[in-house]
Amino acid sequence: MILYSKYLFKYERVIRVKTAGLLGGMSWESTLEYYRIINQETKRLLGESHSARCLLYSFDFHEVEVLQHEGRWEELTGRMVQEAMNLKKAGADFIAICTNTMHLMARDIEQATGLKVVHIADAAGEAVKASLFSKVALLGTRFTMEGDFYRKNLLENHGIQTLIPDDSDRELIHQVIYTELIRGIISERSRNEFVRIIGNLADRGAEGVILGCTEIPLLISDEVSPLPVFDTTRLHSEAIVKYAIT
Image (cartoon, rainbow, N blue to C red; front, side, top):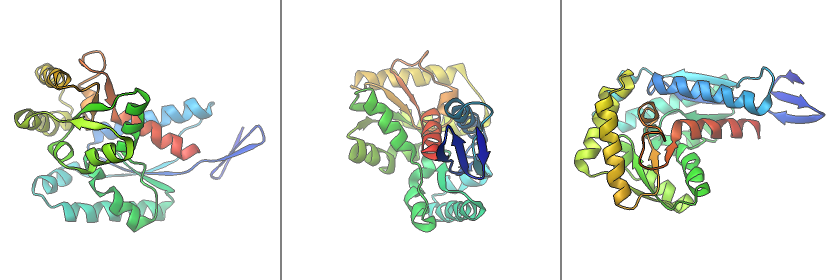
């Protein structure tokens, strides 16, 4: 096996290996998981000593968090688009946003760069469909749970209905994400609250739960969840690798 430029030569078959442009740092704890899984999956599929071709721009999440909570989404879109353009100039063949909430501006990035954005909701939607589920719970930031950019994608592109927690539980989830998980704090109390919330959503008819924030898998897994878990960090990472090598 000989790797030359962006091409993989194996058994007289040529596979073009695309370079991923990763928009990360939102937060760095979950971006660390992205980098690990993407490289592990690349090695699993290509074998030997292979690792992923990727370029990473890591935001200072404090700045992003402030703009999110001040509702300055237009400014955030401008920053995301600018860094995606820089990744394109550096050689990225496609873009991946290493967080759920900031897929709010996925279409803006595609239009500005002309590059495909491998969408996290599509990765989740394909996994849910493969499980033959049609109604799932969605946990994430308030922006993800209450906005339509994620739920609309799941419904229109994958035929999947989503249930979200009630208002007080949405606020609890949001606060745990921003005050604990993005800071690497894992609390048993918070884990128990998430399990309770998932149980309530199961009672409402949810067949599985999409962990629609890339930090939530640090807290919730199949071992503790009352419902089957769809880990968007892993699913998205695997989709990124699949797109890169096909």
